[in-house]
Length: 337
Image (cartoon, rainbow, N blue to C red):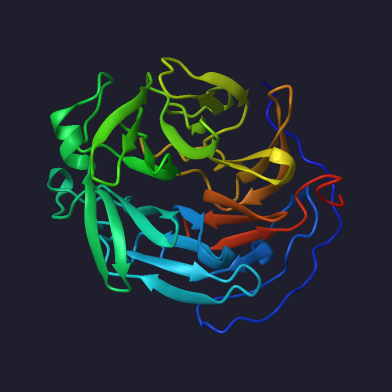
């Protein structure tokens, strides 16, 4: 596949106001194809950014790995409210991990943690935590213990794995492990099993439609465009069907209006080492075309990590702790571009 292409777009529209000091509401992008710059940020000042979810009241909930916190974000104003804290934070000696993602079953939130176990110098459970209150949580699934007892067939050097994304599925969860190259199924009782396994493709983001699971693949280093893929599979599948490919470091996939698929590319790998991010401002929001190609909707995003779509607006969480907002992403009849 060829790498995605961009299309021109009019200037952004200004929006102001936020009641949390660390939050900045700046210029919004109100059409697609825009090459974004620093002033396209919607919110800044988060303690790092990784996974996210749309939760109760249609709000955006974002994992802040450096603080061990989940923050609620008003998608209209950008106002930030601490939703849960006291979760395992990223270990400075590791540089990645901590609380990685969040998912909801009804009004109950569940947090996914990564690279906080004894095998990397931590003392916390690598797994899924149920949020019981603003400062209280309960471990419901020890994914690290499962991985220790059930090592993958592909090469690895972190015994507890690197759980990356969590998605609700059939009253439980699916979790990608980007290091152990598999997707785990987890029940609310904490039972863990393999849902599907892969070669060295580095599974990342998830989206679900009925029984079908859509997943992004980062691909092994150096994360060439042909290795960045979106695939789909159902329960019992031994292999996944390729839906699209052709962008570097694809990390997430989400449905927009009209069941249109969108994906998130972090950009050009910085070359530092396995698990290191892309170069700043090389990321992009992508539209998945019926022929499996990808079109850039917005570029120059700074190291994006996760994507949520609310209505016809995309919210992109970034590694430095920002949220970028892109309005009106859908084409007619689902948008006005």
